Image: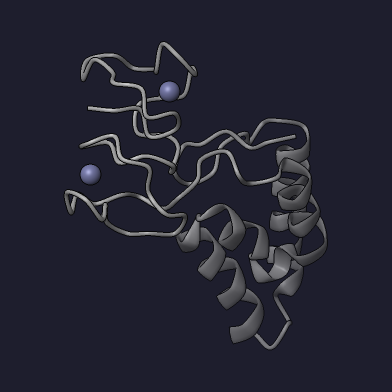
Length: 133
Ligand SMILES: [Zn+2]
Ligand SMILES: [Zn+2]
């Protein structure tokens, strides 16, 4: 297999690329199957047809997620942003279904999560990718 970040051939058992240090499967620039550079946003490799994940790891900003949680936590926006859709929908529904009556619940919930994100207690998105500073 090939490193998806730099296209370097890598040992399938290796956890990280020895050349660029990216985790196995991280990156979105090269086909993991044949090592051909892939177009940004492409779902499959044009050469071999292998599925190429388009998600770029580590592209979520800690600051943005934290501020979204603090200001829009009652709508679960920060969790939508980080990919925690289940939690996000719960927060959104608490607010919407009660016509805002219980918005304080999801607001406090989002506020706490926003602070946890900013202080590094929540430091990963739903895909386990580290948040960037
Ligand atoms: Zn690499
Ligand atoms: Zn390929």
